[in-house]
Length: 40
Image (cartoon, rainbow, N blue to C red; front, top):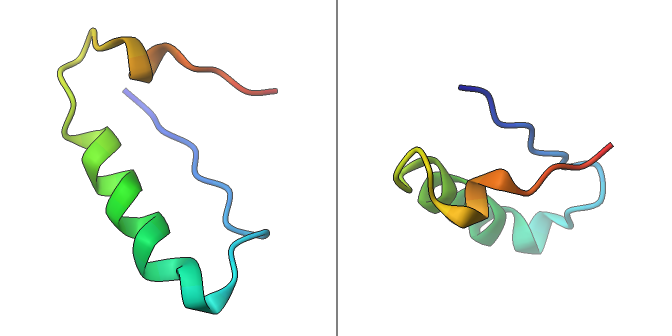
């Protein structure tokens, strides 16, 4: 399972929050609806 996090738009002040959200997404169950969101 892979996850792509694009951080080129994250301000230094928001980095902690972005990393926290990425960790939360990573810990969701495999078939959780939020994990089905695709970009590109």
